[in-house]
Length: 114
Image (cartoon, rainbow, N blue to C red; front, side, top):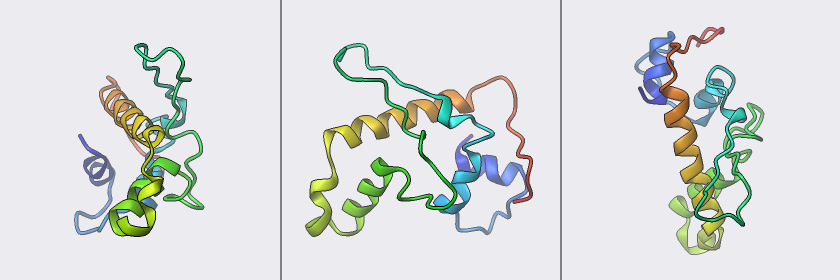
């Protein structure tokens, strides 16, 4: 199940145009800050914790790799230099963490009204 599906399964209206303002609500129930991803073929790289600093106060910019992606996507001419190899590793790490977090045996139930 993807993030949108988890939010809808927990009461968010299907008509909602989801953004990082909604997705950040999943950081605690999915324990996303706890994930540290290692790339064993690259032993000099430290573990990546792509969601370690994610906050509700600034849900887009508190994920530097996502903010860089978003900047490049919307303003390639001025933001292209933000698309770094580090951001690519962080984005891949985020996807790995999400796949693992969503495949746990316990269903995710949010403790708040969406």
